[in-house]
Length: 479
Figure 1 (cartoon, rainbow, N blue to C red):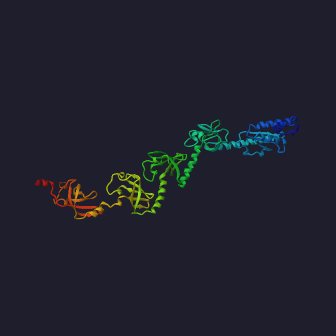
Figure 2 (cartoon, helix red, strand yellow; figure 1 turned 90 degrees about the horizontal axis):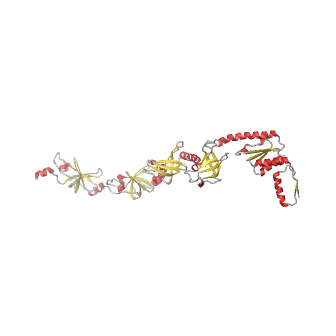
Figure 3 (cartoon, rainbow, N blue to C red; figure 1 turned 180 degrees about the vertical axis):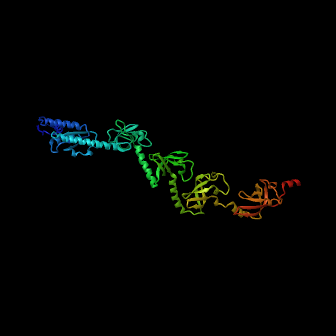
């Protein structure tokens, strides 16, 4: 078998064909008719193509020699463009390309090759200028993870050197190891953290990019007056430290609830909604309010509940919170204040002495302020007042026994039962002028008195001794 080839045939393909034929034929005669100069040019082009990112082949499109050069370069897997003049060069061919090789057909004029080289130099300057803008501190770049260690990862992002992504810059909070969240081949987006200088490492940050995006998120939320989700991480005396995505924020104690609370430690570890009150990105300051969200919810519940409640009616409720001045009671989804003075007709020192959180009680809705949406409740209003009872059980002219509880210059106050005290005027004790009450009565002394007046509205009870008394000194003198 004989093999004849064109003088400009691809040396690479010719060698491949011969290797196949030698396996199929034992009587193979080869006459190498490829021009030595052509073969050497092709070999040089192939060697160059194996070591560059891009090949430019210069020469006529109708030249078999030049076409073969472009063909052998492509055969080794190198991106190759065949041009006749420099005007055909396109800037985008050289984007993100580090090395370029140039070869030309034997008949290509030197001046055309020089023009191509000069045009490529101009392109290199343009791309370098663009690269300075693209790869500078603060710019966002996209890249691919090429190597991962516990403390860092290396990222290829189109620059001539790879960048370092430290473990602490991957996410917030930082992972225990970069390998926990990244692997080779992962596509990432990050911010360049330092000025790029020759031979200096380049550092990237994913958390910085996340923070920039998260600041924009909270700014937009504030502009739209929309709630955002945050998580409580640390309760301090002044309030609660929270996280909002990658940001740290703060909720003052007064903004933690619709009612006064002593601490927000019950929110640590929980996620909840809050509204943005204040933003200062330069100072890394983010202030939020959970109260604003709760107030909106409370108003919605209140509006719905108000459709079903009437002032003066009684309602069953649950004690939700106890404060020094009273208790907040939930009646049908809204909370009203049960003031300490409205808990009992008798004076109490502490709300806790009478009520406990979670206790179910019945209360009367005393009033509702439409402007402030505040409900006033009463527990004692469910029972008759001591004066109502007194009006029913005590009558003018009745003679009863009471106990002296307090002495004053103009008389004594006598308790006729646990809730009612009446005034026993000095004139109803003795007819002596300029008399002193203490000369006739002692605190704790039981006396028989007659009711001479009762005014429920003014809460006054007038008493008189059934028999006028002589002073203690007069009694002693008589003895």
